[in-house]
Image (cartoon, rainbow, N blue to C red):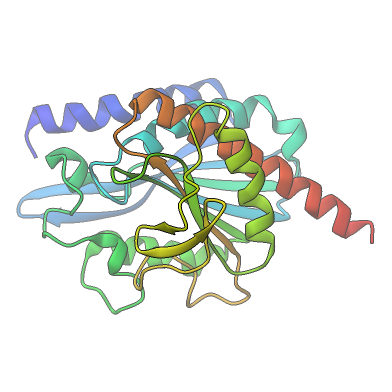
Length: 259
């Protein structure tokens, strides 16, 4: 990794680092390091913890495809919202992974330096170091929910995948409704090769970042923005979708605790 390469990663993460400097509720960590030749790469993790004890733990992942940077940029405004909304998020612990594929990010490619699509490598005994790092965190932290942010350059609108509890659909639908105020929703009956209803897909590719090996299984959402649209708009709608998911999840949890 050259000095200019290091600078591009530093610049990409700098706004998140600045949120950490302003608030003790968010701290920067390193999920793991790995070598490519003589160079060391890191998978960063930004760890939000509310002031109260942790009851619920969520993981949010972006740039698993190195050329889909809008999701990582969405986490900048989202992290600021987290620390400003701490009163609404009592009991929450949230892990942000803004750069899951640092080598792909540097090359501007979907794949990592090895040429692999990392989002087809999970839970297949993969040798890819980024996958092993993220699998370790998935096993260690036992997340109650996972949200992955992606961009699809074949889609004309926002859509998403759901997996796990019925709760996932109940969280994704309002997120899509909030997002489509800025970008249209993809209402095609077939999206990315899958049957879809109202912008929601109930299937998925094998080997995606998921909790397949984790029990009990958390809710899982993949939120997709139209990749050819303006990157700032993609980041904006992803941020809005994340906020909507968290607030709606909070409502479900509050309702369940009062039953």
